[in-house]
Image 1: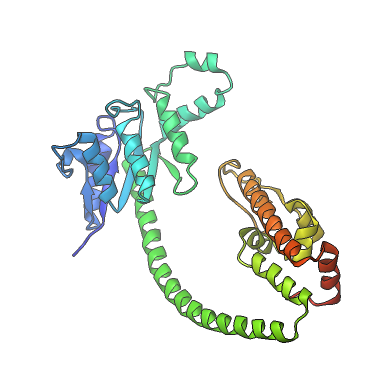
Image 2: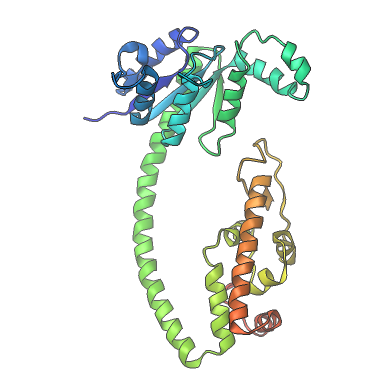
Length: 330
């Protein structure tokens, strides 16, 4: 019977007792623990020991990352630590990561962050729970990932085990729920695809026979908007822009205001420059705003091309929307 493989990544000497406890903890679940000191890593004679560890990370189902006060051994020909490289390999290969950092090291990290604006003062500082500022840069690299970037402090082995026990239970629940949802979605999509194909065929035949040029152009405009991510963002916070509104307003903020909505500043704890977050109230991070702006501009260009090829003008679209019920809004 297959069992999940769990790779434990950390420096060895300062966290060896935590690693020993984790090995027992993992195996109590019936999972396979992979720790380099336990002989679980195959050291390919054709590669370096570090590369062999990285290959084991790629083969793992889960990676546990422990960050302590030692930066650890660097990769051959690089300043990057082996632990850092193992983490980056897990991210690259989409291996789920459960990352924890010693509370004392995290406290030093807070002091480091507070003094980033004073390089001279920072250079003179000694951090009792970190042997290199590269540890703090490593913590930054974990926290600024766009996904799988949770980093939890721990003081004792029990803290680690309690966190992992809760996380793995949640992962199992999510997996079981996802299987059920995916089955429902597949069934629903099959029905919708069939219905949608028939509706499109009927609609195209009707438009060819009785539709006006404006009808046909407006349908083309709607089709360009359907499925567009910025339209999905509008709908998420209660907006429903028409083709005429998108063509009329040059910025995504103006288009939102035309619908009585405001795209505001997100005030959560997440990094607003790297996290793509949008709330139901219309608050967005800077990263999400940039994405929305770029997508909105591309959509306006696409709608403009459709209109230009038809020989019609924006006023024609706006007048059409006034005189008819918007298919899109319906």
